[in-house]
Amino acid sequence: MTTRRRFLTGVAGAALGSASGIWGAKASGEETAKDGGKSNKIGKMRLSFRPYLLELRHAFGVAGSTRKTTQGVQVEIELDGVVGYGEAAMPPYLSESTASVLAFLERVDLSQFKSPFELDDILSYVDGICENNCAAKASVDIALHDLVGKLMGQPWWRIWGLDKDKTPPTMYTIGIDKPEVVREKTLEAERFAVLKVKLGRDEKSDREMIESVRAVSDKPICVDANQGWNDKVYALEMVEWLSEKGVVLVEQPMKKTRWDEIAWITERSPLPIMADESLQRLTDVARMKGVFSGINIKLMKCSGMREAWKMLNLARALDMKVMVGCMTETSCAISAAAQLSPAVDWADLDGNFLIGNDLFDGVGLAANGKLLLNDRPGLGLVKLDAPKNRLG
Image 1 (cartoon, helix red, strand yellow):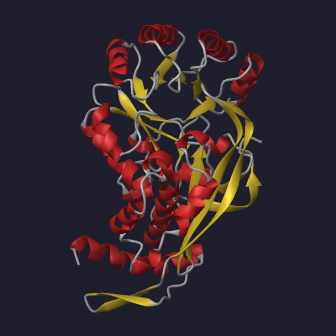
Image 2: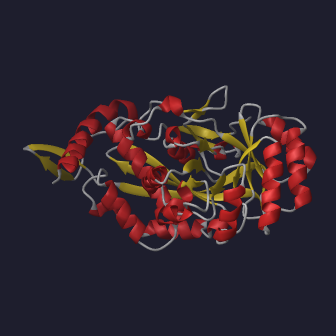
Image 3: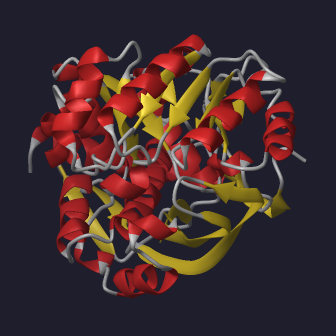
């Protein structure tokens, strides 16, 4: 057993005892892990899951579609009374569904592992069950991180060595809609310091969206074109116009595979150009260098916190900007992504504010729009007795 594995196993045993007063855990189990003559009983991890439909407060429009709900699956991993929470959220473009996530989770067998602290081994096994299914994999990853953090009695921002006071303000997303609705959504976002506006449908709509926001707000704007622009010259002209309107960055201006044209835009752009759809997992990061200014990491695309942390560090080594984003999610997955936020340039973690039926209390929002990480262990979650509308 390596020194690191010995240390983590020892921490696991100690934390099972100390966490019991906070989380109702009882240190008892079926297997015994031995370390230097001391024994700590560690039980079997139990995985459970159920579908959960996320209800959007407003219809959500992007370049290619509009929706009012997002499919989701809630996941729990329990060990000796300590529960780690996880989540899969499946917007249509991910090509995952409730059925595919449930089918994947049925195949996950955690009983073969002696301890949840075997994070690399467990998550490598989960990733190898099949290709793709990244949201399903992320749900297990998130729950496992929450469980391990609780067993250690520490939040993940601290385990990663980050300073929670360095969180950035989170953006608030305004989907494509009629001008009057856009103005209403903008005014509704008074608690947020940065707005994110979806574009990419057509030039008239794009300009109308920005002008509608600017009619009622002078806050910084981030733009997501969602691959909607088809001509590089037009895209650059739009970026230049947007920079005059107080826009601070642009995500994914063109189709994800049109790298040469995106690189041409990035080289000439007055604003950072960020990769979203062009990027999914760790193996994609190095290819983004020279094409984009930086990357947008999303847990549902990259398979969870473990890989997101690796992507962040690789992007920094390549001198690239980093953004952490989300899908429509409860505070479970949002709080998981927020653990990374002190180390990024921009955060787009508003998915829990876009729904009317959140299940958790987790990462908070300061008066200046900054993310507020708490000191609770794991992801810092408390499960609510009833679903909540966070902007109600």
